[in-house]
Image (cartoon, rainbow, N blue to C red; front, side, top):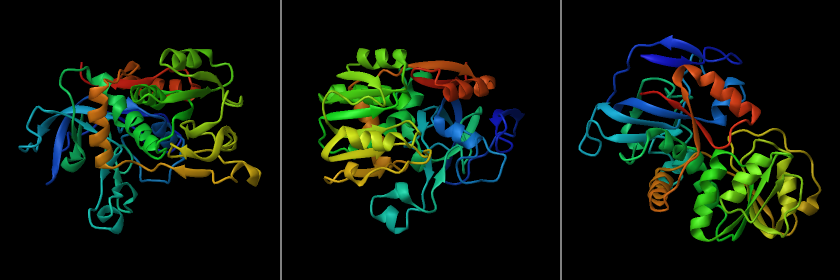
Length: 327
């Protein structure tokens, strides 16, 4: 099978021909239709995540169909989605307590487990979600990371009615539609001069859109930071009211600069989001179908994965990059 492989830290992906995998007990083999491209994949290329033995195949927003290892719940030919969290032990205190996303033995799709920048992948049946047959695969892929992480970040905001979104990329595009459906106001913060992203946010119903260093017109109840930029943490703290929360939604962030305690005082809080749970996936995918969420995507051939990653690096995408694997 064809695959785009990361052979070593700091190198571009390489086109390899690999042997088609066989599913182990408890797994299914998936014929991949499409796979989203995420900033996390870029962190992998740049060596910003803890080292893992190379080579590895990235990609953790997988849409495909069961080709082997079928069960009654996942029959052959059914369409499934595979997210970042691809395995947990099911036995530790975190798993038993409903926090499987924090399992110390977790496996991650496209990092410690084989990923979706390939024609086939094996995946743990427990972490395969049934997804609709009647939509283009490319439109569904972003729901499996951008959507799921945004949903989990939003759940940490409680009943907040005015929410700031720092970084208006793939995750914010999806979350903006959730917030609109729920009747909550959102405020979009972008790079200075990124008028295209600001216009996109306003078109999706933003109450306000502007540069990340500009205060919003009124205090926020909560802020979610999707951009991996540490200096946005004090900026977001300054934008939220007393008792508000700042949620850091990424897996990696540049150093957070020193800031005055006065920004945190007033029972403001900073939390991070780590991975997802199967409950998150079930709840969000059901909600996405009811809204329904319309993703904004740009498709690339599997062989053009490096081009997609470079576009993400430059901030030259509005929405999500998706590799179209099966024509």
